[in-house]
Length: 175
Image 1 (tube, one colour):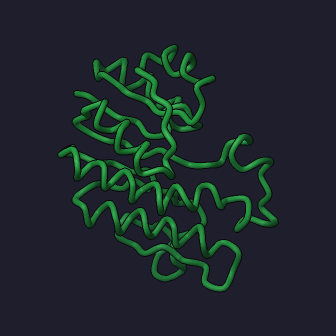
Image 2: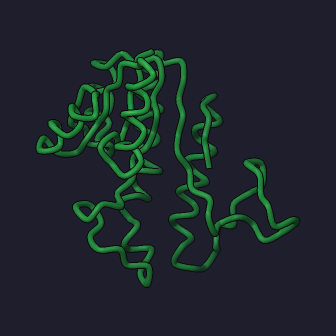
Image 3: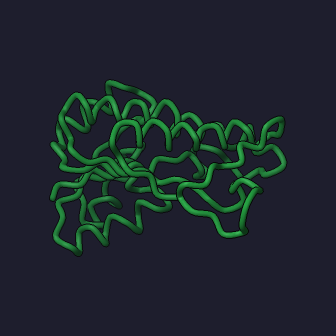
């Protein structure tokens, strides 16, 4: 299977790519920097530089890879994109990730539709954002707590966007 990992050089992607390669998949992994192409190739993937916030860049990368599945791992939590983690100003620090989870998701889904990619999987996040109703253990069906009127709200709304957009397009989202 040809697998396109958007965010393949990131924190999660760099762990996922070697596992996919070990299982015999042909992997194209994206990075935002030409300096990381060698790293991506060391993971066993074909590397491609892609700007997840540029619809042309995303469309061209997906079309060239001709994948059977797209795995959305894009975040902006690296020092290069977001700087030092700043949980006191989470709304500002997480802005690159918020944009990738909204605009970037939309660009990947548009490229998926335009090129006829049959499968789409996206990462989500579930740690402290489960709604505070019902039992302590939450399932994929339980809604997120969007933390209205807090600095975390834009990030939670972006997660909701990923879930809604991807599942509406027939894809899967893993919290």
